Image 1 (tube, rainbow, N blue to C red):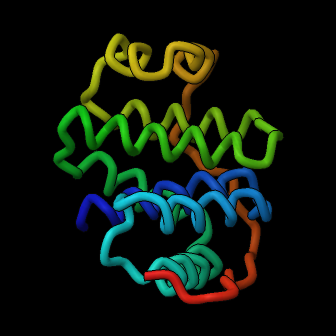
Image 2: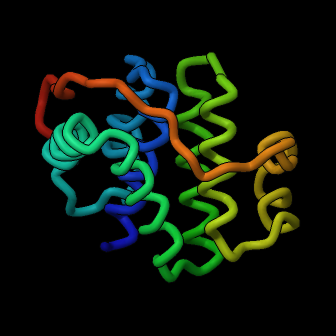
Length: 156
């Protein structure tokens, strides 16, 4: 998987990990797609809708598969920081940060080789995202279905 697709899949996984896709999260993805080169050369809407189809069909195994992709990805520190930034922005987009989102972020973070010090240099106010949980489990509780995401104009 290309790094830009992993970034998009990160945003999607973080959008869905709380069981809800908020309009603000969709707007964030649209803004990132329009303003940055992070999703360069991707048909964002088509990818998101294929992810929705997959997560509706596979449920929690979709998120587990995503976490394995993060583990298998060869990311330099810049790539890892971009992935972390996308995850945090997506989690915070709807102004409601739920425990399930922070817990999922921690599952992502533990699969990255970047140090906490480098993360905190880039995101000094996000120390709470790095604190250990009382019990960290890779189990994902999931029983949700989502609708397709439709943008007013196609993104590429």
